[in-house]
Image (cartoon, rainbow, N blue to C red; front, side):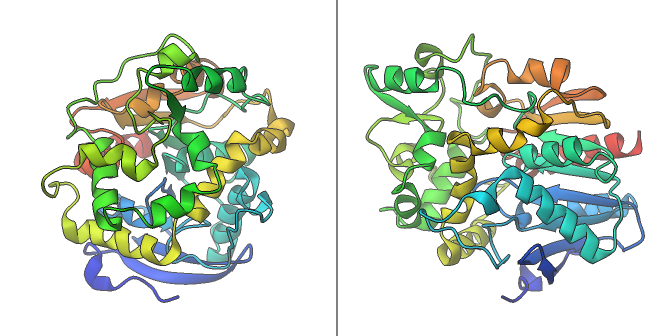
Length: 364
C-alpha cells in the first residue's frame, strides 16, 4: 500500500507507511517534527486519519509532533483481516491499545503528551489512558463519553431490543445492526452508490440537519431510545443506506467538499466496512467488556477533557454516560465543551473551535 497522494493533503501534512506495528503496516498522517511533544489522534467510524486534516497543521504550529494513524481495519493500514467468522481478538480494545503502543515503539516515542480520540477513537483513547497512564499522559475524548469499564453484559439489552422491535413503527439499535453478518455488504454496495450514501450519512449526523437538537434521555428503555434519530435507532427492516437516504442533502457541505468526500469514498470502496464493523461486534457481544474486566473499578487518572458538537446526539445515546464520565470515569476531569455549529463530526465541522480547545488543554 502506498501513502496518500500529497495533493489530497493540507499543507504541512505528510503521509507514510510504518511497517512492523503489531503485525500491521500502519498508514500514518504526520505534522510537526520528531522530538517535539507528541500528540496521537485516533479517528472514528466511518472515518480515517484524514478526518484530522484540518486540526493537524494548527497543532504542529503550536509546537507538537502530531500523529494520526488509520486504525486497524481502516484505510491504508494493512495486515488485518475482517471475515465475519474470523476471531474477534485482533479487534478487541486491548489489542487496539497494543497497536498504539507498538506504533510509538517503532517511532521511538516513549511517552505521549496526549492522546485524542473521536467517536470509536474515543473508547480507544480512554482505554489507552486507563491501561497505560505512564505512556498516554493526558486524554481528550470527543463525541463518545467514557463512563468507566463497561459491565458484562449490558443490562437488559435483550429486553430493550425486543421492546424496540415491538414499537409502532418498529425500530432497532444501529450498533446491533452493525454487528449483523449482512451489514458490511449492505453498506459496501448501497443502492444509491457509495459517494451518495456517505454524503447522506455524514449530513444526517451533522449540525446541517435541523433535526439534530439533542437532549438527555431518562434511561435505557425502548421508549426513550426511540427518541433518537434514525441513524441511531433505525427502522427495523432498513439497512443503514436506506435509513439515511431520505435525509440526503442536495449538495456538498462547506465543511466536507465533494473532493474531500471522494477520499473517504475511494478508501472505503477499496477496503469495505467489515474492518470497522468488527469493533461493534466486539462491543455488542460483550467481548470487550470481558477483556477489560481486569481494569473494572479503575478510573482514568491523567488529565482528561471532553469535546463534542452541541448538535451531536452521540453524547446521549447511552443515557447517563456523560455524567458518569465526569463523576466516575475520570479522576482529573478538566472540562466538558459542546461546540456550537457542530454535530457528530466536530473536528471537521468546526475545526478552528476544536483546535483552540485542544491547544488550551494541551498547554494547561
